[in-house]
Image 1 (cartoon, protein in one colour):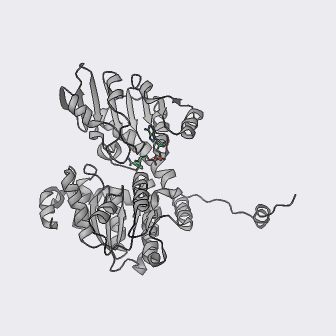
Image 2 (cartoon, rainbow, N blue to C red):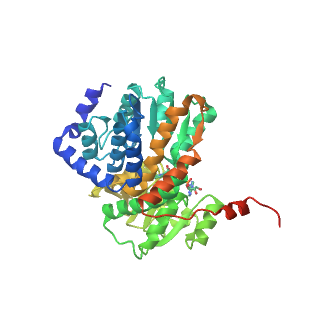
Length: 421
Ligand SMILES: NC(=O)c1ccc[n+]([C@@H]2O[C@H](COP(=O)([O-])OP(=O)(O)OC[C@H]3O[C@@H](n4cnc5c(N)ncnc54)[C@H](O)[C@@H]3O)[C@@H](O)[C@H]2O)c1
C-alpha cells in the first residue's frame, strides 16, 4: 500500500494540535533521559548516520520519539511503524511526522493495517532495521523485503526467541543484535520499567485498590519479578505460577507463594501474565475464576490469555471503563480484561518511564552504529550487545544519576589475577 494511502487512514496523525501535545510529551521524556541525550550530543557533531536509512518498528511512545529524533539528529532518514496495533500514542506519532520522520502508525490499527505499515517501512529500503517483537524482521524474511538491510536490532525477549528459531531454520539474512540481552536493558527495562508501568496500566484501567487483593503473576522472569515486587509494594498478596523450577524456587525464596496456575485460578482477584508463552490462562482457568476477576497481560503478544475463548463463550460483552472489557460468562460470573489482552502497560498506560528507556535506547543507538561500522565482519546470527557498549551505557547512566563508584587499586587488580596461597 502507498504511504499516502496509509496516512489518509490515520487522519489523527496529521492533526496539528496533536503534534503540539506530542511535542510537549517528547520534551518531558527528553528531559528525563540524560544518558541517551548525552550520548546523542557527543555523537552529533560527526553526524555518523548521515545518509543512512533506518527502519523502526517500536511502540510509539514519548520515549521512542526521543530515540527517533536522536537518529534524525545524527543524520538518518527514519521510517517508523508501530510494534503493536494498540500501543501508538497518536500525539507522539503526529509530532514525529511534523518533524520529518516517515510515520505509518496510529492507535487502533487492524491486524492487516498493522502489517501494511510494517511493509511500508521495509519497502522504504532501510539499511538497519530496529525491531521490537521481530514482526518487521520476520516480514522482511518471509516477503523478501530485506535486500538493502545490512543488519538489525531486536528490543525484547520474545523477539529474540523468535529470531533464534528463524536462525535455526535459517538462513538469517543479516546479523541482528539482541538488545534485550544487554544487562543495562533487561535488568532495568524489563524489571523496573514493565514492573511499574504494568501496575500503572492496571490502576488506570480499573481504579481498584491493590492492598488486600490476591495478585497472581504468571511467569517469574525479569518482567514477572518487577511486577511481583511492585504488587507487593502496594500490599497485594502475590502468588507466582512458573514452569521453570529455578525461577519458581527463586520466587519462593523471595517470599512469594508459588503454586500451579489451576490452583491459583479460584483464589486470584487480579491475574497478570508475563511469560512470552501462549495459552497461559485458558478455559480451565477461566472457568474456575471468581466473579469480578481482572486479567491483564504484560507479555509481548496477545496470546497469553485465551481471549478467543472469552469472546466465544461470553453471553454479554461491554466496555466497563476505557481499556477494560467486561465478559459475562454463561454462569453469570463477570471477568474483566484489560486492553484486549495486549501489553497492558502500553495500552492502558504510557509504557516504560523515560529513565529506563534512556538505557534501552542507548543500547539500540550504539548497537545500530556498531552494525553500520562492522556489518561486513559479523556473522548472520543473533548476536549479543558488545560488552563494552553495555558497560558504557551503565557508566553513562551512573553519571546521569549523579553517582560515581570506586576503581580497583593496582594491588586489587593483582590480587584478583593471582592464585598462589
Ligand atoms: N510489556 C512490556 O513492555 C514488556 C517489556 C519487556 C518484555 N516484555 C515481554 O514480556 C515477556 C516476558 O519477558 P521476560 O524478559 O520476563 O522473559 P523471561 O524469559 O525472563 O521470563 C519468562 C518467564 O515465564 C516463565 N514461563 C514460561 N511459560 C510459562 C507458563 N506457561 N506458566 C508460567 N510461567 C511460564 C518462564 O519459565 C520464565 O521464567 C516476553 O514476552 C517479553 O517480550 C514486555
